[in-house]
Image (cartoon, rainbow, N blue to C red; front, top):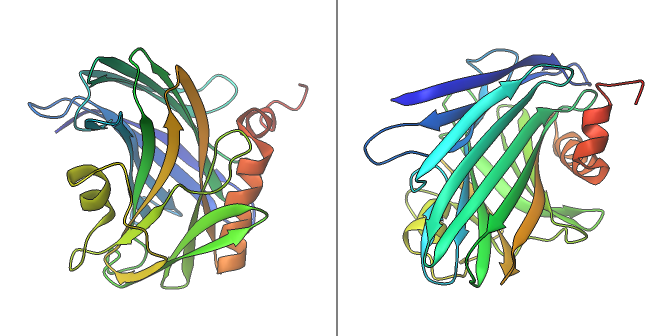
Length: 265
């Protein structure tokens, strides 16, 4: 049972879309973390993405910000800009990773933008991963299809079913490519199995799959004290629309997207 579930309410985000999102804090015997829980359109019954997990690998151990955190906090701001924030403390081999994440819905583009900042107290050979589970369509994602494409220097994974498309992109500073990507299925190897359960620091990359899929992408960081990166989820009625949505908001950056809600700034 989740202890805290906060919503960014449905918001018009351009191209006739209304998008909402939620973040969740877990408080059970084996889960004390947090994650961006759902991305949905029109209403809560049309869930497009069920869970966006952040995974940390320090070169030795693998930690999931939802299941392996020692503590977490989740809330939503509603002053001028509605944002969900998630603060998670993750134990690693010789210290901790303090992960702080902010998520907002773009004001004029059908997309979610997630900003992640990790402060690392221990040396390590770090890789960060994002795992998302598309659940597009009336069958809860049973017959989804996903593939790797590119746009304007970005690697993008697109998932689709029932005439709806969801695109995932990532950026760290000027780096727009994934350090490996896994599109997984339960009858093969899922992205979660590859990245979290069996993690050896490498993704068994592929570029296409279909069925009940999940999607995982990597970001190699090395031995750093601090790392900030962006993840976007774009939505559209075709591949071009979804990819353009994901790329445009991540190209704008988090502060630019936030300022759109504050016109006098």
